[in-house]
Picture 1: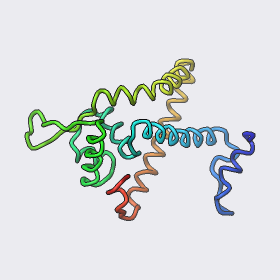
Picture 2: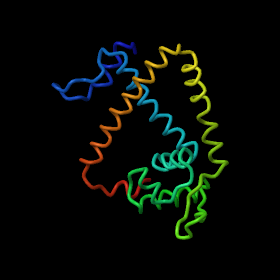
Picture 3: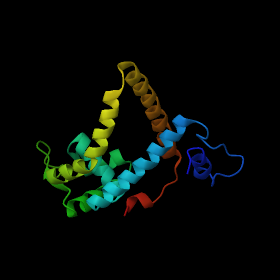
Length: 179
């Protein structure tokens, strides 16, 4: 399929009269492709590790933020505390995390990612991360500044949209029992 045909196919299900975002705009099309491919990478990474998308997001938080309590993890994932406990239970059963006592507060239990799981996850991501790093390294300082500013603005738009969706969303029990 030619690049010109992709947008028409991508938006075939959008009702008449609703504008098709990105049609005719190379930057929007590339961002949409990155978004779609990010989902594909996450699905395949989750399958490789034997975990679902919520559990993968939890692993990402634990790796990037360090040990957290189940409640802190639930807050970061924007799920209920009960759902957070289920996530930790599943990850522990799969051998990806371990629970340990908090160093100073004996009432708290911290969740740590297991080093072997972190290594395994990073081994899967290494080609992607290295490839993107090579692209960034190839940019001139001026181009890098433009890209960084643009992506920072995109992050702000996404964050605002996500926050608005979270505030307006109806209560659902789905997130309390992710599979």
